[in-house]
Length: 420
Ligand code: EPU
Image (cartoon, rainbow, N blue to C red; front, top):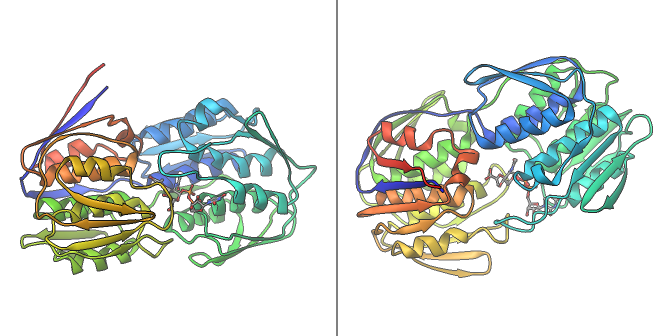
């Protein structure tokens, strides 16, 4: 298995280009299933999760080609199958995003239940209840959700107890072809949802309430293929901002959207990091000591759970006490044990981590446990004294486009070793 090695303690200097958002691209790729024709997607990141969803689309009958590194042409004229197998869903939960579009287009979808994962139980009950509200008949058999509808889905009101990102996306994609109007109350309002709404609108869907927690979808009979650019990855952007905060230095991130990280900006500025936002760029400088801040993860525009592990690594480098509440996923502290191996003092009490900053970390052998936890170990390694060796780095390949290359180009001493 591959490893990443980092010799820490070098400030970062230069420019990094941010890739398209993984969590923006995944639902948009799924949305191409909604109607026949050729769709063109720009700014698609090169990631394992993207290859997985394309593989899934291939098993359903779609074809695709990369016109260039980040431009993808998907043809969905022939959708002949309606099953997302356990083999694919177990490697990537977001495979569940084909449920809504398949049901809307074919009146049938069979999707493996994802099961738990490293960060929590992550059920899909909201997706299922929402689709039932739209008239789908759902049965659970042998670990699969089998969904059917006679004729078209029918518009209705769907309410989420907690705003769910992929839940909102699935219901949106199902509702655009339903008969009548659907209202999604307490919907998620992450920027990736607005990206999907723009794609669906380009396909001819009628959606009101973009960027709010109440979406109104007036179903249409037919959609047409569309073109869209995937938004910049705000979690990759945030990861690099925190990395420069941890390692020190002066870096400009390009091709990003500073408006998508309001809460991270607040927290980084409070911890002594200088940020200068341009329209599509961010300059980040850290030269002085870091200050401790408290964090509570919340749905957008609150502090993203997908940056919690990374900011925790940063907080271990302060000389104060930082309390980090994880409010979205119940088990997202797997990085704590690994950070402790690097000298961090962190105590976990339920959904709360208390970080006693030691002002430093030491390089160690650590293990990546999920995608964002892996990123936090890279950040810790950049700041630590000595060498950090991170194993199980396949998690990083799921969601970071050329992380090692991008950090190396700004002066980090980081390299990958290929193992068996
Ligand atoms: N929830 C339920 N039932 C459901 C759906 C969600 O109880 O049917 C709960 C979840 O257990 C969680 C909360 O609702 O406590 C919110 O989860 P959400 O559904 O929003 O998460 P998701 O859609 O499965 C997406 C991202 C995650 C990101 C979360 C939260 C994609 C493909 N995935 O997951 O991204 O952490 O939203 O922002 O968009 C990552 O990229 O590393 C990643 C895990």
